[in-house]
Amino acid sequence: MQRRSLLTAALAAPLATVGAVGALQSPAQAAAWSTSDDWGKWTTGAYTVNNHVWGSGAGDQSIWANSHSNWGVWANHPNTGGVKSYPHVAYQLGRDVWNMGNVSSNHNVSVPTGSNLAYCTTYDVWGNDHDYEIMIWTQWHGAVGPIGSYVTDVSLGGRSWAYYQGSNGSNAVHSFLARQHTTNSWVDITAHAQWLVANGRMPRVTIGEIAFGFEITSSTGGYNFNCNSYDVWA
Image (cartoon, rainbow, N blue to C red; front, side, top):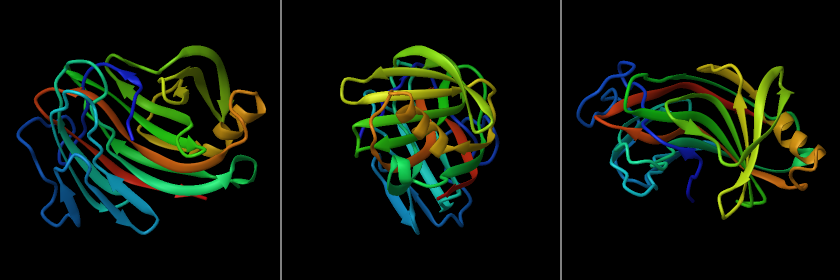
């Protein structure tokens, strides 16, 4: 499946040091799994870690993982516009939106800053297979932006979000951008999904995949980023 937000520069975060730049790297030698395969994936328990390099003109990217909550990516993508990849960890829920229960997630990430970087740290929640996409951006860097147009601000899970609505040509995209960036976050996924239905923005759907990771547009020269901890509570 493809990713599609209108990001436009470069991404990264550290396997060892935030903002580290260099040749293709691997994490600690004791990593349970690693790959440079564009579509490489590793399933551990209820989670699947995905390299997911899909965009046109993508460069090199490698991913490693010790668990679903401890993984990292090194990426060297050119600054040519367009999303190059979405390395992420995925969890399958499979519940009706009105009967999904109290679904939430927490994460802690380390991300780089600097020039030649554009990326966002985001959840990607899918309804009715891949007909409806809910993106929840908790942090971003560089010249990036969501698909569609700004609609309104909304308070969900005790936080303020800017809500955008649009389409990528294949499916509807609903994006919530945090008004306050954070790399250490808790997100009420149920609140976001049910708000969309209650306000007529999305039909009553089955919430399927809940993904979390880094949407990368460019990371010229090679950068690392880490997911230090992550869980879905469902």
